[in-house]
Image (cartoon, rainbow, N blue to C red):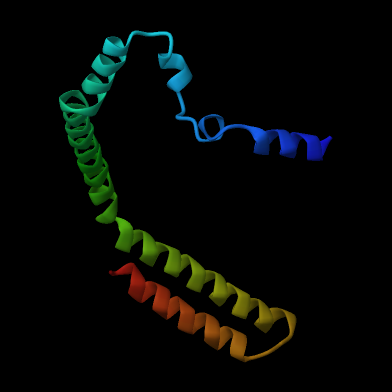
Length: 123
């Protein structure tokens, strides 16, 4: 069955294989109506539409850029806040080694991280 469908496709004429999409919809209309539709869509109307879309896209982009600029001012604060939280968790992890494994470096590392976090708090 697959060979029959491939052979049937190959036997079709060039006009059937390389047909223009949507041409069958215009075949029932008059030639003048088809030319009128073509002229409306291809020249001034489509160019005006494209310009209108470009202006609309630029305005949307400018509004989004304004929103992101407001967030951009807070970005360094959020980065420092996240770094402080990460260093604080490392400090308490090191402190846990002091109490669990009786390793003396844990308390020293914790104090080091606390000093760094305190320094970042003043930024």
